[in-house]
Length: 182
Image 1 (cartoon, rainbow, N blue to C red):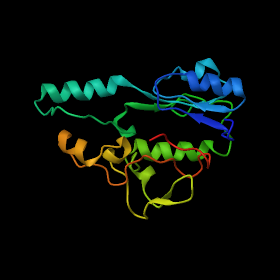
Image 2: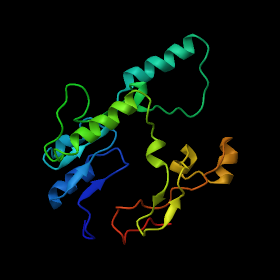
Image 3: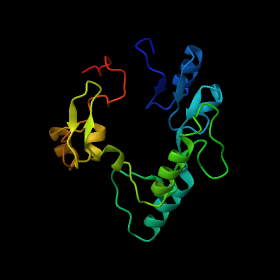
Image 4: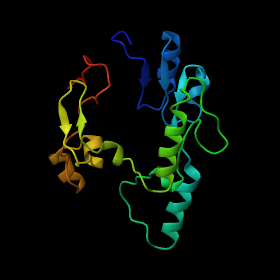
């Protein structure tokens, strides 16, 4: 915030960053909790959250029909297992969301719900880091291992490919002087 950020985003399951954003007079985006905006609705833009019912139903159904395979499980928006506060059916966008952004988010969310746009499409190059350097070339996409920073050694242990682009950088638009501690 001191470096000029106007929105605080977290990847931790806590409303803390939303609360601090409000205290500092900037906006926040919660994570993994439909209730994350409750701490400061005026300064919270949205929060992605899990809708576990459809996910549990899919897992139990696959166990019952014998098709379940153990391992990492990932669910995209089209599974019905994910929500975006203020943009799901029957919800109103939070007060701080700019009017011109609302239809853009609704359109992209609709594409995601239809399976036409996935979490990997967001991470298709060209992508520059916050220093303006290209980190993902045009036409290339990050993989799950890239998003998780799974290197080749850990990938071999887990039985999957390691990362190619290894997301250990901040994307363009993030405060230019910010760095991820190594």
